[in-house]
Image (tube, rainbow, N blue to C red):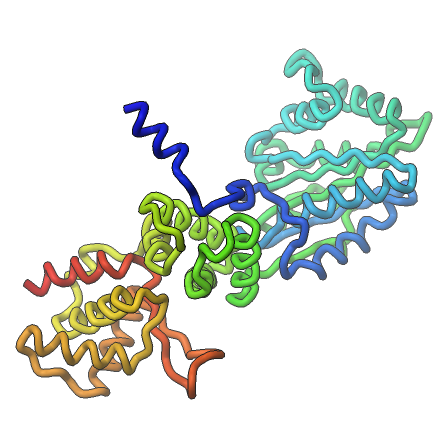
Length: 392
C-alpha cells in the first residue's frame, strides 16, 4: 500500500508550481485590475502623510476583492518603508473572526504571536494595540475581509473604535486606516457614528469578469503554474467560456487546477478539453440522468453526435456543419431518417436550453462566421456512453 502512495506522490507532474493555483496566491501582476489598484492608490495616498483613510471594496464572489487588497496593501507598506515611514498591514478574515475580541486578537497577534487569547476586554486590547503602534512609531492599515460577518454578529463598535483611534490617543496621533471587503453594500449596516468616518466616494465596486478577462487570468495562471506546452489553448478557451456564466475567476482557477490533476491522474502530458469537461463536472455539474432521460430520441441523436465529434477530434468545440454531418451518420446507425436542417437546429437550441451544450460565434482563426458548440459540463466520453445506453 505504501509503495502505491509513494509511486503516486513521486510521479512526474505537469504542474510545476501548485501554489500559483491556490486561491490565496497573489501574482506579481494582477490581470485586468490596473484601474482598481490605481483607485486604491488615490484613496490611500494620504497615508504617506500620516493621514488615515477608510475605504470599502464590494463585488460578487471571484471578482478579485481579496487579491486586490493584498496586492495593494503589500505594495503601500513597501513603498512607505522606502520613505522612512512604517505602515503595519493586518488582514483579518471576519468569517473566522466574527467578534470584536477575536478580530482584535488577530490584529494583536500580528505584533505578538504569544498574546493571550483571553483575560483582556476589548478596550484593554485597544490600549495594548496603541502601545504597540507607539513603540514602533507606526500607523495601522487593517483589512476586514467579509466584514458583513463581523457587522452581523457584533455591530459597528470595533469599526468605530478603530476609525476614532487617534481621538483616544491624546499624547500622540496614531493613524489607523480601515479597508472593508464584502460581497454586499455594507455601508447601510454601519451605525451613524461609524458611517460618518466613511466617504461615500471611497467605495470600489467590482464587476464580474468578462469572458476575455477570464481568458487572460487563466492564461496567466497556466504560465505560472504549468510546465510549458502542457495546456492546450482550446482548454484555456473552454475554461473561460465555462466560468463566464458566473464571471468568477476563482471558479476558473479551480477548474484549471482540477483539469491539471485529472491529466496527472491519467499520466498524460497535456491538459485537453476532455480534462476540463471532467473538472467542470466534478466541480459543479448541471447534467443529470433525469435530464438525459427527458430528451426525446432525435435530441439524444444530436447530443450524441456532438459528444462523438468532440471525443474523436479531441477538441473543445465542434461547428454546426460537422455536428450535422455526424448527426446524419448517427441516424443511419439507428435506422432513423435524419430530420431537416431546420429541425436539427431546433434540437441544438433545445439541448442548449436544457443546459447540455453552449453555443458561440466563431472568432479569429475561422473562415466566415459559424456557430461553435461546446460541451462544458461533462466529458464527451461519458455523454456518448450514457446516451448509447438510453438509445438501446
